Image 1: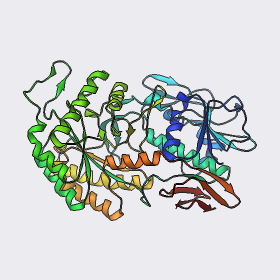
Image 2: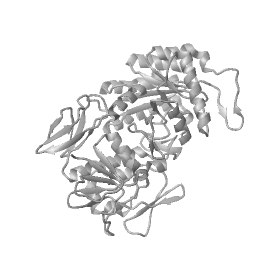
Image 3: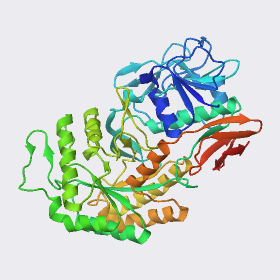
Image 4: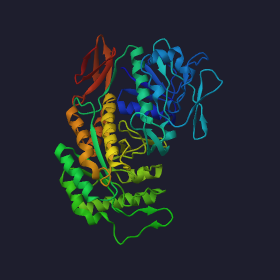
Length: 483
């Protein structure tokens, strides 16, 4: 059976684990490897059995990319002779070279990390690739960062300081190249239903219920038959301040605007949880209560049992993650954790979360200095963004707020929705996509090579696999594939 061997301490290879789980490519995990005779592709941390010579090219954690001499050396050139995505990865900090040959340092938050793993080394029967992503190290690396907006323009957003999705994209290219170098087909479970190249997820965080904005959004979405997910905050216009605590109004604002919420529900959109107070607390107990109170309110007001949660203000930490899981959500979508990419389950202290995380682009209309100019810019940005996501077959996610995006929805969204409809991209709510992904998550398969045929051993007839071999990509449903 063809498989990837994942090697190393569990905590040190979570990046590879995330990628392999997202791809659903057959893999086996072991803390150490002593016999390479049955290994096709080895990823993770180099075991003792692999000798690392001084004249080999190196790269350390791609989270902290070394773009020094290693990338001008033969082995890297062989891997990325045409499309070297590494040099375009967007990370925080500046790269610095050291005097040590073929090794680079990356400075992050005034700290140095040295991870000296070879890109590739060859044994008699296989190639081993050791690029790794220590996602645990950067899970809480959240702050304001300038992200590319239009060509030479940037927008400051609250998000992850490390673009983990681009790093994972790079690791995937390395993995596919490894299969090519040992003349094996790379086969993984396709990400979407049927032949879809992507999926469109439309999301609105309702910090407070802006009636005009909601009506505009519902009108445009109805015209294009777009269904979205509305994360509802109950306190509404009331905020929470660190120094003075709750601004204790007699009652929260959102229930007063119940007819507007019913319009959202009756139009077929998903209603989800955005907290009772628009605030992420420092401890587990208060976060649990904040989320639970919102759940109770949504059930009382709309008879809804929310499937999903998004963190107010885009803030995230481990105690919040525990509170989310304790409230038994199917999914969460915390825009600060990732800039995009595929759903995943993160690991906290070595334990896999039960809550699916759906990454979301955090670019949104946070302000409009010149409304007409800004709308035109956002239209162009979204159209370019759609093309970029399609190129990588990643979900297309658009985030807004009724009091911002809703006010300009009739001018901003039609050209964007036109493109989505024209390209035939299926639209799903976040809850629907989470259900699909969890169904996909529960499947596994193996495959083996028999002459010129590849036989898939599993009943995945309702799903398709992508086969990458001899520089060709194909989507297949058959259990037997002719190479």
